[in-house]
Length: 102
Image 1 (tube, one colour):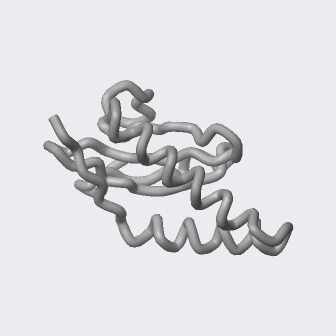
Image 2 (cartoon, rainbow, N blue to C red; image 1 turned 60 degrees about the vertical axis):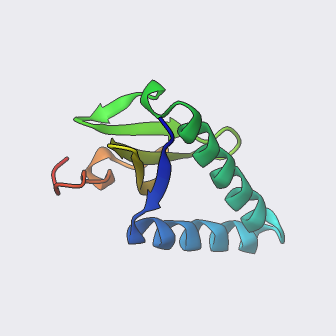
């Protein structure tokens, strides 16, 4: 099955905040972070069901270089990206699924 990515608005906010933080640390790091995020999405598309479920149907994949994880849900042929959060973020901040539940 060929999957496609849908990104929730919260993810855009997450990425803006993270990339801005890295860019303040060192010029170009924000772009490097974004490139790794895109690579992580490619990894998800190859085998979306292979990554660990953290809550009901929500899955998590860790980024390779940065201490962040991408949370997503597979719905039919769509991979819905729910959040991009720091690995140390408390589970209460984890995303809700498409039905609004954890």
